[in-house]
Length: 110
Length: 114
Image (tube, rainbow over all chains, first blue to last red; front, side, top):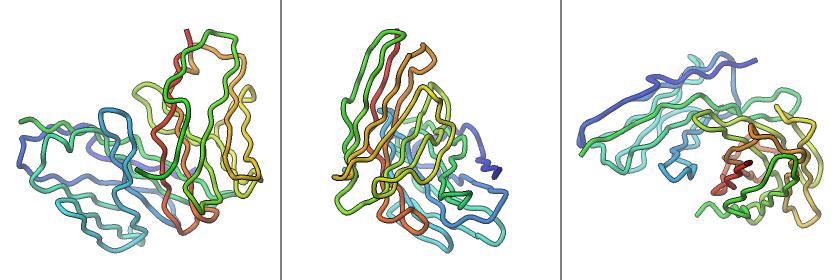
């Protein structure tokens, strides 16, 4: 089956720093989403980005579907950015399934 | 607020028991998905329903079952519960079958089996 790999697995940042999270996938996909799971366990939809680049405030994402990767950029990080960031890909395998990567655990220090 | 409602928020029960988790999708969404997230683990896809019919199946145990009702809400039934079933259970919904629309997640039900 498809492999979804996220890097780095863990990241510690000083408040105000920038970072790039990466998601590699091993097969063609229909679409891709980035989620943030906050410390309370809620899954927040950040970007729905099958291809191209999108920006939302301090966050932006780029997906290059032909090369099977996506990047999530966090600029001027804040302590509220802490949590786990998941990449999820959607593909058809006898039904449309969304497969999640293992996540990048981010801690932003004040 | 994603618009997906899950109840209850927390559930504590004993081994061997049976529980039912409930999910109401966003208004207009026809597909419902169930995911399991065990402690410090990623999200495992369990099952998808589209307009009342099962559409895709993941790593769902035989002790678990789900259904989607005519009003589009869904229930996940977990029976003969084991300690290892303790997890956060998420429901998500999409407009169509999900090929070209984003997943929207509820806040989850935290199940503790003692």
